Image (cartoon, rainbow over all chains, first blue to last red; front, side, top):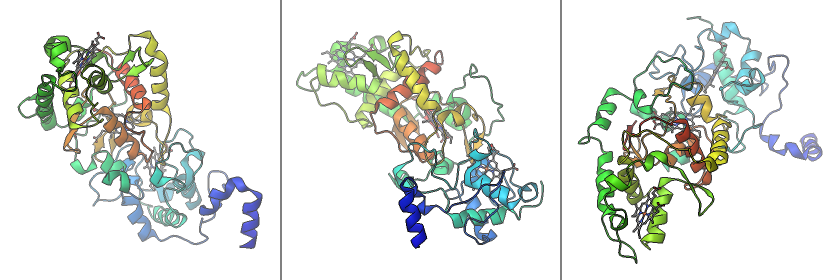
Length: 146
Length: 264
């Protein structure tokens, strides 16, 4: 606690970051969990199909037979747990721009480089650290390719 | 209001509630291939737009016609008192808006031009933006150009404002970090959940939107798109909307005006 306060005092420009956990990018991945714990895949699935929380199915299709309207702006999520490690999936969710600056996939866990964010959404990431971990935990279970 | 508060966003903001639009398997195309939003809506909605007896926008057109001939304000004059038959005097007018307005040194859109006449010529209080009356008069004037090609942007003085509109169109914004172009240029024809993304040609405004259960202006439509990506919409009447409209109308040059159109 004392250490955190000192840190904030030294880097006043980063005060906003107090809401966001720090993370380290290694290559194309964030190897460590944002929360230090493994997420819950059941909660992760619920976030992924929720059109106000995860928003994933606005763009992606995936192995969700009960979901009627799935977008077609992005690759099918089936098999992503085979194609990518959990660290790679974590970076894709946290900030896909780090991998592809032209991506249309929203950056889910950052406040950097955003303009005219709506009043109700300011200074908040799209998903919390816990939610990101839940989503990552769920995606790693998607090992069946279509 | 409910939408702005809950921020609902992509799905609801883009008409997700209304069910499946036709899912056209369209490939990306060069920008020269212009498709009106009309081509992306269901055959039922197309039929509704094309039949004046079932097109709900025609109610606003009829109200606009009544307002056109009604005396108002301290001048006691009607629009018709000065402009005569709108079928003659207003033919082609909506197809070239926004125009350069020398008095302000800026582009002006049709709604605000109507309000200038309300204030200066009729000596009456201007209609609030998005009011039933202003939508009705805009729809009535717009309909006088139905089927005519859009000609906006010929006045060279508009160029810096059009360029600014293009900048706004291409800039990323909102918590979800989208530019208008990300959807409407790079991904048109694809499905965002249940909505097919059109090319964003403003050919039918004001128009009747099923999701609104009402007529609305282009500004209202643009606000919906901004709220959809969790951006702070510009206030009604902002210069930014006029610049965006100017860019969009210039880009849609040659396309026929459809006012009053119908959209999901």
